[in-house]
Amino acid sequence: MSDWPQGWTDDDQPRGDRYGRGSGSASPEGARVMPHVRRPASGAPQGPPQPRGGGHDAYRDGYNEGQIYRGSGQAPPPHRPGPPPPGRGPYDGDDGPRPPKRWGRRIGYSVLALVLALVVIATGTYFWANSNLNREVDLASVEDRPESGKGTNYLIVGSDSREGLSDEQKQDLSTGSAEGKRTDTMILLHVGDNGSTMVSLPRDSWVTIPEFTGSVSGNRIPAQQQKLNAAFAIEGPELLVRTVEYNTGVRIDHYVEIGFGGFANVVDALGGVEMCFDQAIKDEKSGADFAEGCHTLNGSESLAFNRQRYQEAEGDLGRTKNQQKFLGAISSQAGSPATVLNPFRLYPTLSATTDALIVDQDLSLWGLGQMFLAMRGAHQMNIPVANPGYATDKGSAVLWDMEQTELLMSQIINDEKVTVGVRD
Image (tube, rainbow, N blue to C red; front, side, top):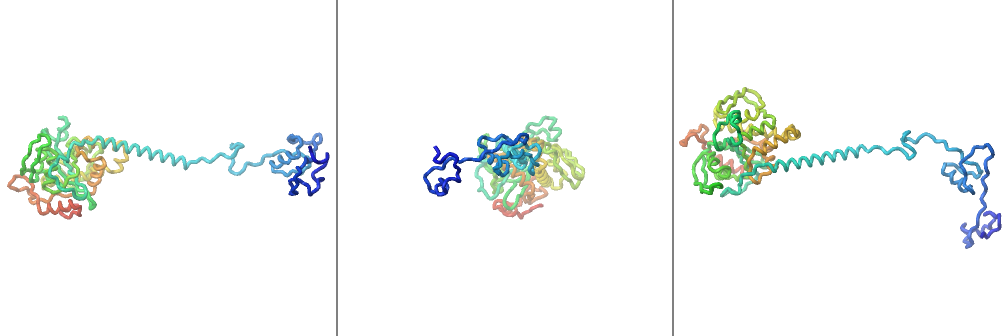
């Protein structure tokens, strides 16, 4: 029950006894008499219905509409919507403007997805090509090897193998039908901090073939004086590596070999290789027949150019220069954006290359790529020769200038700048 007589208002309470007004009184505050809201006269505009005892609620509603309640008992005027706030379109609805489209985030996600896809494709391509390499050469079986020097040394071998070629292909490539395989090309490639150097080892070089235990027959092969390419014919890649190491003192880190058919297939997969000639070339035995000027050589034409030697004044020494020039051209084209960024050229080239090459067991696709890159800007030279005219008591053979050869090999072993017989 109320403590105050009926009809008293708050103003009738003694000022000192107001509860909750700072008086400190323990008496509770009684009910207040609130003014009544009068109903509008007949015909007057009707406002929204007011709740019972509407003084307080009318004030609240007026406050929500941004109006000041004056206690007059009049209903608030009807709401008339104004123009939409800036940035709010006619179709944004009552919940506010549409959120801006986040194009930056969408583009970022798209770029990230593209990068991830490229990484996955590149990784898959690498492992696919790396697993297809023919790792047939066991360098661990090579005997009495020299100590490792600085840098990395590759022995690049081009063989005259006709394996896998049909009779028609042999005729088209002018390879003949000789059985077995011999080495037409041997190049020592050194890659180090002082640049790269390609040193051709003529196949007719007169060298010592050291003792060796055959990996296939198990027989002990005696030491002998022979032409360099005889080592390959006697016992294959392992004895050839052993012979090169024995006569140069350079440890071979990796071995790469390619035959006639594989060589032509790689060139065709690249779409040909451009070569320029200072004079016309014609060699009936190899099939080379080119006018002076620049030409895009296909696979069979490239093979004919690399095999021709009878027009060269230096014979086999002249041929090795052409081979180095061609290897520089093909490596530049293989590493160009036109090949690397074009899947219709990249995949056929990788497939043809991995099918064509025979490598050592430790060579990865990454190491093979480094070899190709190194050939692009390498210094090109022949081993120093004592008898450029081939005149020896051994018949047609190449004798090395041992003093210059030892100096050259010392520079390679120690990864020093090569100064012996460098031809730019």
